[in-house]
Length: 256
Ligand SMILES: Nc1ncnc2c1ncn2[C@@H]1O[C@H](COP(=O)(O)OP(=O)(O)OP(=O)(O)O)[C@@H](O)[C@H]1O
Figure 1 (spheres, helix red, strand yellow):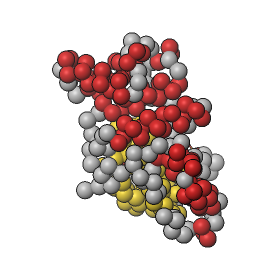
Figure 2 (figure 1 turned 135 degrees about the horizontal axis):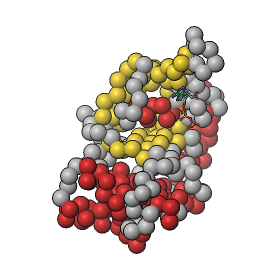
Figure 3 (figure 1 turned 45 degrees about the vertical axis):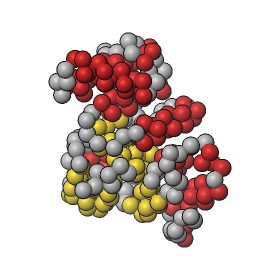
Figure 4 (figure 1 turned 60 degrees about the vertical axis):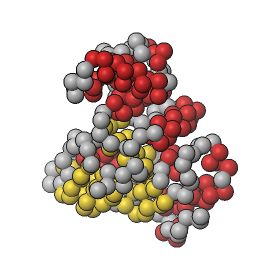
């Protein structure tokens, strides 16, 4: 079975302007994320990416269609994903507490996860006392503390400066390569999508439809700085931009 399976998803919201009308946010969206696959959904602002993710997370109901996930998904949002009243370690421990993991096992797992995301020294800090990048690392560590193998990420690095973003992308890949997780990652950044993904699903302007799927030929493990020297990087960037601009002539096979 695949990690995530989305079938014929439609979502309409009541129009804010006219009570008799609806706003179609998603139009017949179907996609699969294989086991241990990393799929990025790339699309312009307002095309329904977050709606798709919220439905996949079970936070919203579709108007039509189905989403199946191999296990209950863990979610990382762009911001406000950590509890401000808990320390970094308590945030990471939260899903373990919910599952009633015994204290000693919980401590060991939290220590392991903090080590993985480089926050061991900040275990006792509160979110207001750490940087935005550290808060997002806390959020990633907390999602990893869930025992499921489906990870949904909604522009988790979107609010960060570029250097921090690239550092966290590299870290995420390093961590993900050590796990069994299937990832659906939402982004509006062409660079981010082709840097992280095995496959990029491109969405149109609203109503969000899937207009193309692009296989990313770079192997694993990936060094995301080195990638930028690969001639295919420029080719795929060009192809993705053309797709976003609605240039159908760009829907060719990615050069290998
Ligand atoms: N709860 C809601 N009620 C009404 N309309 C909504 C609701 N949530 C989203 N929409 C509309 O659905 C469309 C898609 O929104 P969504 O947030 O999914 O887009 P997005 O691609 O994630 O955008 P961005 O990249 O800017 O975050 C937008 O036109 C938005 O106004």
